[in-house]
Image (cartoon, rainbow, N blue to C red; front, side, top):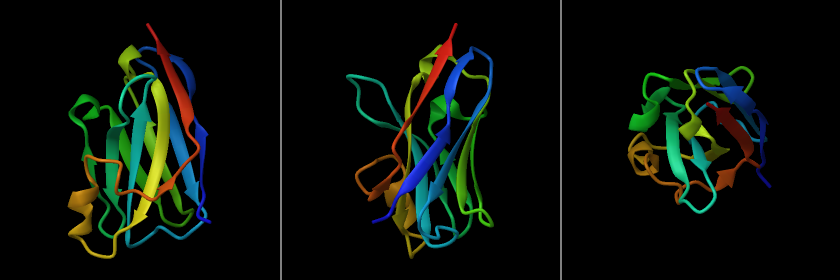
Length: 130
């Protein structure tokens, strides 16, 4: 069974920074789409950032562009989400996700939605106070 183990997160004041990490139990250095999602109680899960690991192509939702950065350390097989200039509205439970993407065309179907991802992390809370 594939596992994604998350770490990082916590509480920070507005304007601060946090880094989330996600370590999959399978090699995702190639042929995978990976993403970070967030969810607040009562709302739908929202995609925040995505990466296609064959090309390190990245995509961000508008609300985090210029503030968040998704990256992968292939040697460590670890996915990161660096979050800077945090705002109270970034407060949520954050999840990493992964799915096999053997073709470049797979990436476009994995950007924007969570239904195409088969593997999920356990979630980590990020709280930003004003």
